[in-house]
Length: 183
Image (cartoon, rainbow, N blue to C red; front, side):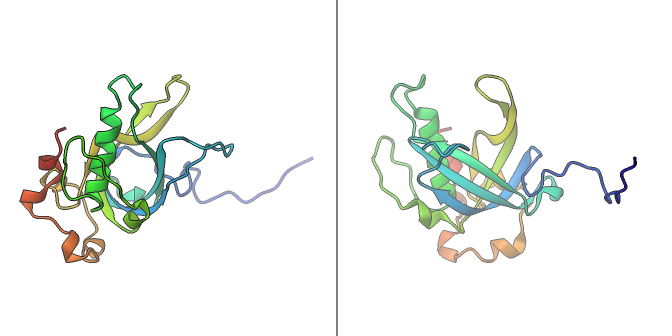
């Protein structure tokens, strides 16, 4: 008995439309989910689910690919009292123009869905799950920047996409995320 089939053009594992490589990237926010769930549809408490799409980056073969991320609010019972999670959220919200200034300890209320369509830059790296059973791409520390931040100046960017950003959401060097947030 035999089995006949046509071979594909490539046998490279492309992971479909999902990112597979570490690097520095220019992204667009495609979705912000205020009620994210696990793969088996259980709610994930105190988190935002973020879907980003690569516009440009240090690995051009990742352009057009997506990544799903979770950002947590931070909790008092966290080992650092939730400060790192809060910092990561703050840098994200500043990068996508939902918050303009850092006011330490101030409570703020924003509409996350207003960030859909905004652009940002970030560094992605692989990290291990808490139990060490798998590796996955995630934001490296809190390496998230507004597209105009000087720390993001060497990150490849899509000029056409940058041209679509409203002038009120562009920044000059005095308004950088890096200078407004203690890292």
